[in-house]
Image 1 (cartoon, helix red, strand yellow):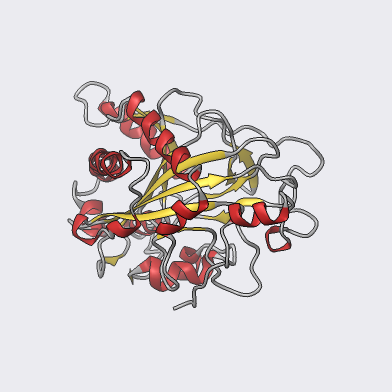
Image 2: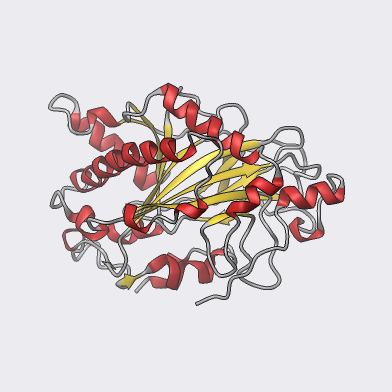
Length: 352
């Protein structure tokens, strides 16, 4: 397994020390690949919209499932509407994110990660040398299974943080259940084909992301180019500041701030791509920075329970579409992070 370590200070601490100047460890010399260094903005992505309430409807369900399938097999993501989480609660999640990252450094550092761990508050993990760091500070928390939560990393300030995150997790688990069923239904395989591989105790990780303003946005990435190691990921985007970009057919696209009020972005992870035998695509994406405004997002990663074997579903293998991937286990810890910091998709290394 790859050796992990941490910067001595979070990004916010470094900015205070440097007076806002960009530390060398974050800079892509000459700018990052595909960036708009000539001030020529990237095209805007037209991300499909899927009404989750229609996926199991007796009226319009088949049409919604086809939209769902097309979205995940082309872009690898969609904007989810009617997902069951109220506008007011989504706003509350954004607020507690902003409030936590605005706390004094001494308070935030109470939740700082342990040396060899992912969980807690901190900045980019150093997994290889040399490595260009992401322009972000994060709060990374395992929220499911509940009996594996490490509450010492769960902030007590803002006062409602723990209760709100617990409620958010309950609501997200309902979305996850519906999406796993829809994945199977859209591909016309057994209803529990995906959920059986994910298991009854999926590992859910919620990551709160904070991207400070950056004086050199053309030289720095908030989040390096990658695809997710999850089965799929649910993202609550900043409602005012854009920054997420996706790659499709070797072209980068900007994602707008949620064009549809209260929508969630749902994207396939590499383990979802494996289970679908390559039909669903795990999109390569990154986050850029903003010279004037900070940005926040909240991402929930749905990963199979520990020790579950992940492999292409039998009903998706035939003579026309042979099996594409090997069987894997403990994918994120044992495979994914070996490739993540190199900007490579680990799933491509598993092809038969």
